[in-house]
Length: 268
Image (cartoon, rainbow, N blue to C red; front, side, top):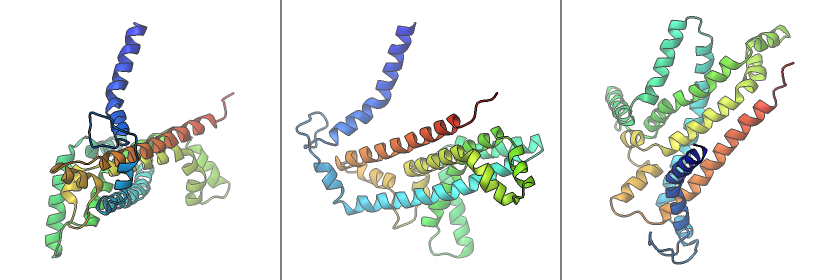
C-alpha cells in the first residue's frame, strides 16, 4: 500500500508540475519550437523587456493587484473583527454565508452582475463611461475580500480573548490594544490573506474582462487578446518570472506561519 500511495502521489505531482516545467524549460529556448530545444538562450527574456505593451499591462496588473491587496486586507481584517465580536450565533452564521458567496459564485456570474451594476450606476450618475480602472478595482476588492476574512477570522477565534482586555486594564486604549496585542497575534492570517488577495487579483481574467474600461489592460486580458493570433515565447518568459515571484510569496507566507507557531511558549 505504501508503494502504491507513493507512486500515486508522484504521478499527481508530475501531472501538476510537468506543464510548468515545460514552460520554464522552453522559455530559455533559442527557437520558437515547442518540441525541439535548439539552444539555451535568454533571447525571449530580452524580447520581453523590449515589449512596451506587455510591460505596460504588467505594470497595470501589479498596480491593480497591490491596491486590491491593501484595501481588501484592511477591510477584511476589520470585517473579521466585527464578525468575531458578534454574539448572535444565527447572525454570525448568516455573515459567514454572505462572505462565502463571492467564493462559491462562478466568476462569469460575478463579472456580468458587477458590469451591469456599474453600467446602471453610471447611467444614473450621467457619466460618459461606466467602466474604468475604478470599477475594476472595486470588482477585485469584492472577490478578494472573502479570502482575507477566511484567513484572518480563524486566527481571531483561536486568540486568547483576555489578552486585549488585559492590555486595556494596564492602560491601553481599545485602539492601542488592538494594534499592540491583537494585530501581532493574528499577523500570520493577515499576511496569508494579503498574499492570497494579491495572487487572486494578479490571476483574474473573467471578472477583469467584464469590468475593464477602455485604455486599461491587465496582463491576463493582453494574453487572451494575443491568443487570437499567436502567443510568442515572450509569454513563456513572463510566466516563468511570475511563477517564481508567486512561489517566493508562498514560501514567505509558510515560513511566517511556521515561525509564529514555533515562537509560542510550550504549555506547562
